[in-house]
Length: 121
Image (cartoon, rainbow, N blue to C red):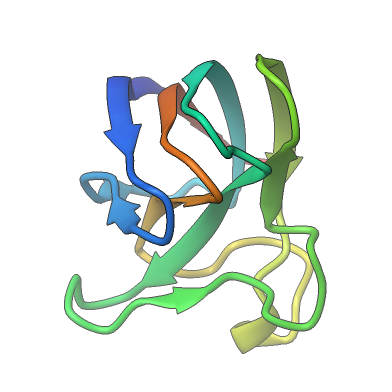
Protein backbone atom coordinates (compact mmCIF):
# COMPACT_ATOMS: atom_id res chain seq x y z
CA UNK A 1 0.00 0.00 0.00
CA UNK A 2 1.39 3.40 -0.98
CA UNK A 3 1.71 6.21 1.57
CA UNK A 4 3.07 9.70 0.94
CA UNK A 5 5.43 10.56 3.81
CA UNK A 6 6.95 13.89 2.87
CA UNK A 7 5.88 16.80 0.71
CA UNK A 8 8.25 19.78 0.58
CA UNK A 9 9.95 18.85 3.85
CA UNK A 10 12.98 21.07 4.46
CA UNK A 11 15.98 19.49 6.19
CA UNK A 12 18.72 21.80 7.44
CA UNK A 13 22.36 20.81 7.06
CA UNK A 14 23.36 18.37 9.78
CA UNK A 15 19.73 17.78 10.81
CA UNK A 16 18.04 14.38 10.91
CA UNK A 17 14.27 14.26 10.49
CA UNK A 18 12.16 11.11 10.66
CA UNK A 19 8.94 10.41 8.77
CA UNK A 20 5.82 9.07 10.45
CA UNK A 21 5.88 5.31 11.02
CA UNK A 22 4.31 2.99 8.46
CA UNK A 23 2.82 -0.34 9.55
CA UNK A 24 4.12 -3.23 7.46
CA UNK A 25 0.81 -5.08 7.97
CA UNK A 26 2.39 -8.40 6.94
CA UNK A 27 4.41 -6.96 4.04
CA UNK A 28 8.14 -7.69 3.82
CA UNK A 29 9.49 -5.32 1.14
CA UNK A 30 9.27 -1.57 0.72
CA UNK A 31 9.72 0.55 -2.36
CA UNK A 32 10.67 4.14 -1.68
CA UNK A 33 10.30 6.93 -4.18
CA UNK A 34 11.94 10.24 -3.41
CA UNK A 35 12.48 13.61 -5.02
CA UNK A 36 15.12 16.07 -3.97
CA UNK A 37 13.23 19.20 -4.96
CA UNK A 38 15.60 22.00 -4.00
CA UNK A 39 18.89 22.60 -2.22
CA UNK A 40 20.41 25.52 -0.37
CA UNK A 41 23.78 27.17 -0.61
CA UNK A 42 26.65 24.85 0.32
CA UNK A 43 24.66 21.66 -0.25
CA UNK A 44 26.83 18.60 -0.94
CA UNK A 45 24.63 15.53 -0.37
CA UNK A 46 21.43 14.14 1.12
CA UNK A 47 20.42 10.68 2.25
CA UNK A 48 17.15 8.91 2.95
CA UNK A 49 17.60 5.85 5.15
CA UNK A 50 15.08 3.10 5.93
CA UNK A 51 14.63 2.43 9.66
CA UNK A 52 12.77 -0.46 11.28
CA UNK A 53 11.02 -1.04 14.62
CA UNK A 54 8.77 -3.56 16.31
CA UNK A 55 7.55 -1.27 19.10
CA UNK A 56 7.53 2.29 17.65
CA UNK A 57 10.06 3.30 20.33
CA UNK A 58 13.34 1.65 19.36
CA UNK A 59 14.37 2.40 15.80
CA UNK A 60 17.40 0.97 13.97
CA UNK A 61 18.77 1.32 10.49
CA UNK A 62 17.50 -1.63 8.45
CA UNK A 63 21.03 -2.59 7.37
CA UNK A 64 23.85 -0.73 9.13
CA UNK A 65 26.50 -2.85 7.38
CA UNK A 66 26.13 -1.15 3.99
CA UNK A 67 23.99 1.26 2.00
CA UNK A 68 21.33 -1.15 0.70
CA UNK A 69 18.80 0.62 2.93
CA UNK A 70 19.56 4.13 1.61
CA UNK A 71 18.85 6.47 -1.25
CA UNK A 72 21.56 9.09 -1.75
CA UNK A 73 21.45 12.36 -3.68
CA UNK A 74 24.20 14.73 -4.81
CA UNK A 75 21.94 16.70 -7.18
CA UNK A 76 18.26 17.55 -7.53
CA UNK A 77 16.28 14.67 -9.00
CA UNK A 78 14.03 11.63 -8.59
CA UNK A 79 15.12 8.23 -7.33
CA UNK A 80 13.36 5.02 -6.44
CA UNK A 81 14.65 1.93 -4.67
CA UNK A 82 13.30 -1.37 -3.46
CA UNK A 83 14.62 -1.83 0.05
CA UNK A 84 14.32 -5.29 1.46
CA UNK A 85 17.26 -5.97 3.75
CA UNK A 86 16.62 -6.44 7.47
CA UNK A 87 20.09 -6.95 8.94
CA UNK A 88 18.72 -7.35 12.48
CA UNK A 89 16.82 -10.51 11.54
CA UNK A 90 19.65 -11.85 9.39
CA UNK A 91 17.36 -12.07 6.39
CA UNK A 92 16.75 -10.49 3.04
CA UNK A 93 13.18 -9.47 3.78
CA UNK A 94 11.88 -6.96 6.31
CA UNK A 95 10.48 -8.75 9.36
CA UNK A 96 9.84 -5.66 11.50
CA UNK A 97 6.32 -4.44 12.22
CA UNK A 98 7.03 -0.81 11.29
CA UNK A 99 9.27 1.20 8.99
CA UNK A 100 10.02 4.89 8.59
CA UNK A 101 12.37 7.10 6.62
CA UNK A 102 15.15 9.24 8.09
CA UNK A 103 16.16 12.29 6.04
CA UNK A 104 19.60 13.90 6.33
CA UNK A 105 21.34 16.76 4.51
CA UNK A 106 25.03 17.70 4.41
CA UNK A 107 26.41 21.15 3.69
CA UNK A 108 23.13 22.95 3.05
CA UNK A 109 19.36 22.68 3.24
CA UNK A 110 17.56 19.97 1.23
CA UNK A 111 13.85 19.91 0.40
CA UNK A 112 12.31 16.46 -0.11
CA UNK A 113 9.15 14.72 -1.20
CA UNK A 114 8.94 10.98 -0.53
CA UNK A 115 6.56 8.06 -0.39
CA UNK A 116 6.70 4.39 0.48
CA UNK A 117 4.94 1.35 -0.92
CA UNK A 118 4.78 -1.83 1.14
CA UNK A 119 4.45 -5.24 -0.52
CA UNK A 120 5.01 -8.96 0.02
CA UNK A 121 7.36 -11.16 -1.95
